[in-house]
Image (cartoon, rainbow, N blue to C red; front, side, top):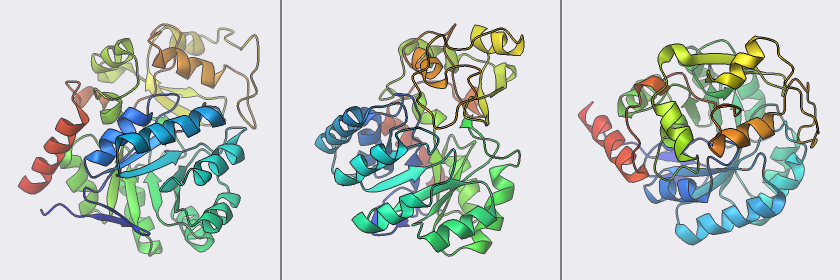
Length: 314
């Protein structure tokens, strides 16, 4: 198969791969810029950052590359509007958003001529997004890591979405190599989004302990937790998730009000930060379903070289 370009509004990615915006502080400027340099689309995860931190990351990514740089910001975060507007003022190339749905972001995108790409899990929501002005949709299924909006698999949903809209459709969840990319493209996707494979890259901002823990986790270590966001989340078993399973009290002593609506069963931001910093006992390690098939930590360049080779050999 020839390597297809991913065309999204006026953007053209030479390799049809979007790097997932993994919060908190996993997908930062070094990772996003490295992906953009390879011809993909790099995303900075804005959730859990302050406005000033997000601006600094965008500027650092711009310093490192002239490639395509976007941001991923969860609708569920309290400062969603402020973060999105700051990103648009910094002239990011696109906005990706999930964990809820915002009509306002499409209006803001039109005002600044910034492509807006929502993460959806149904054809109905994809059609609504297209009518509101989405430049593309990312179809995320149960295979994905982090917050999950459906129990159905992306590989089931994607053909339904593709038949319902005319805008580009990107498949996300359980994509870790070129063979997976080919599989999803053959389902009709215009591109793919990959998260966990890039979390286990040299340029990922996850702590070494995080990468080693995820790299050596077994398939049976996968767990589904109930996030304070109000959605299930896919992660890796550790002492913290075992505390959740045992119904131990892990409620936060102090609330930093990071979410618009929080069930307060634990502090999602604090736990994700702990993991990113290397605390494998008390942190929450989000991961996609195929983590166990990743056998080594590679540079972003080598990940792309492998993907391109596998596409061309398919």
